[in-house]
Image (tube, rainbow, N blue to C red; front, top):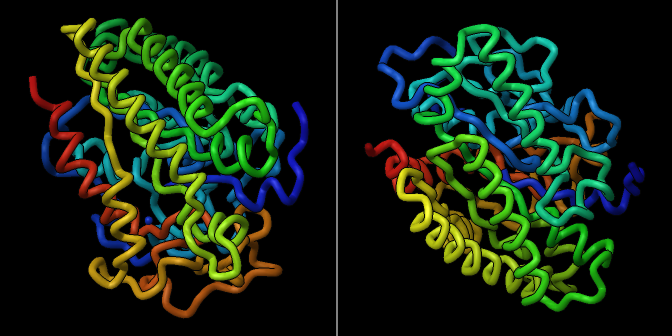
Length: 360
């Protein structure tokens, strides 16, 4: 696949926890609410799948992992600590960290309780993973079939059926399509904002449809954030005053509206399946516009380096310093929120949406 340029990498999107606010490591005492959490998507929910593939879109070096558990080591998560799916897995009572499926250290018990197939830099637009040399969304579905075979070999067909019927399947992608493929690379010149949002809805809905055909019965699609307001997009498209990019947000809002309708339509056609669209746009925008209400003082710059453009290889321990008070920052690098921000956002998502999937 084509290699990424450094400039493209600058805006690699990840939406996706500074000082830890959730439980630390250790075995959960409460019964699990779900047998497994299975995740697909981009760097917001990639716990390290990109570590072992041929791409420069990685986060397996300092200062990533600056506040990760006790060892403060980088794992491949595009964050200073935990990411949303770690918090969701913990609240479900499954485990404290959701591992990367491609991790060489993946143990059988982790396999049986869920993994993430996500790959930082990917998207619903077929062009996006090719431009970034990462794992496409259809390829993540292929990995799901491999996963099912491994579970079948380790614990039998009954365990596979339990995971597919009662497990939570979450999808988080689309931001890289808008920030990178559409605006930075200008790779879809024939599309206006509305038609590009429709293209993303088409591919996202097709992914959900294939996931349901594969046997998933509880599926959550995480909506697109106000991507025009993340630090890197403010820097690149927000003018001298670094305001939010209206064009980015227009596509995000159009995609969210269209995907919500499609999820509702698919749910009506699949009475035995729970399909939930998780709209995070308004909540995250409020965090960005009123950071002090959520315990932050800085929401327009990242903690890493200058906070204006650094992300992935440009946010590294050799050339990039770390802010003095990580907990004051909504964003870790120029695109990804801090662990603290993810914890707050995940509480909102879990209480408003995930609980709906747990109802019989």
